[in-house]
Amino acid sequence: MSHRVVDFRRGELEEMARRSNNNRENPFLLRDTMLKLIHSDDLEYRELTKAA
Image (cartoon, rainbow, N blue to C red; front, side, top):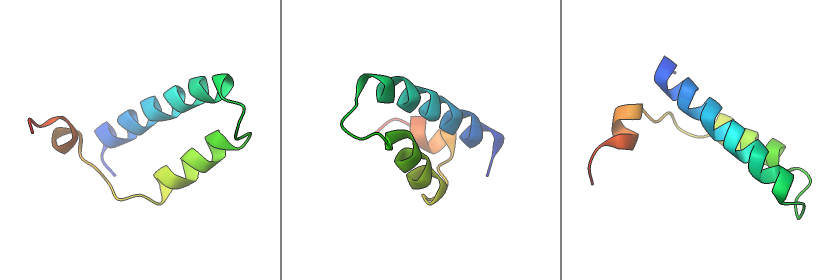
């Protein structure tokens, strides 16, 4: 996994942690999100940010 993808995923984690503090419907939202990220395919930053 590239460094950029790790940084992007770290940002996603921080965002999900913030959202989970505002969303009490799923007390395991952060855990569930982390598991989804761990098991997802790698996504290069340039692929994520390329023009549609």
